[in-house]
Image (cartoon, rainbow, N blue to C red; front, side):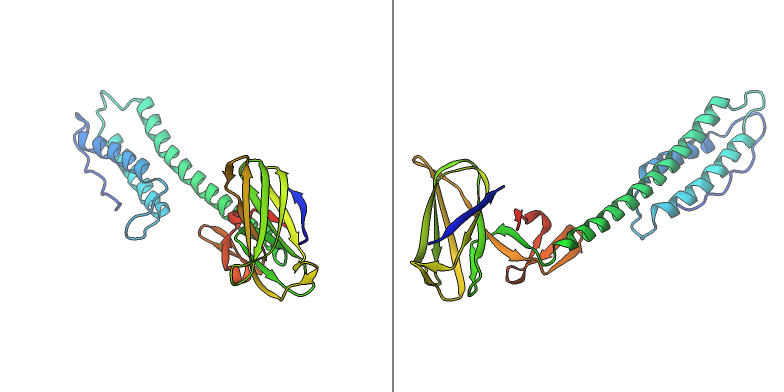
Length: 252
């Protein structure tokens, strides 16, 4: 057998009717405070009816201005509203607006980043990648690339190739194999004789002394397409189906 190591690797509320100049409107003040609280609680969300936060924010700003005018019209002239209070109220509504704008900007940046990630991943089309799997596809005259991943160093690693009936057709042993990704290449022959084209199985057994090391066999596949999705990009790998980009262990 020739198995060679390659490398490691809200609705608008009507304004309150003016009261006498001798008293303030506690209900208006309470409504104003309630409005600000509701605006804070709804920032960046959408209603069950499908109304976006931007629409709700526009209605909220209109309500805010009407309530502020109502408060000023109903204030006691002998004890007018404190300037600090008005400034604080204006600051609160501006803070809510600022948070909404920041959320919108961040969402645009995220969408652009995801779009760019798909474009970058498109360069992988036609290349081979390593993913979890034990399948080896033998084609006449074409070396088979594969690999395995070790969580820790192994004193000995036995690499076996099995045919469709489960019989071992070729094997080799490596010593003092480092942890991580290890690549291998098989010439599709056994005992100097080329084996029939078809599908074979890779089996990797690793040990460190008397302790077994859980080796993960890796199979190589050619990327046929890159498709964006809700959970990121996925790669179409022919017979292996679609795999997430995060499933790729190595590139060949």
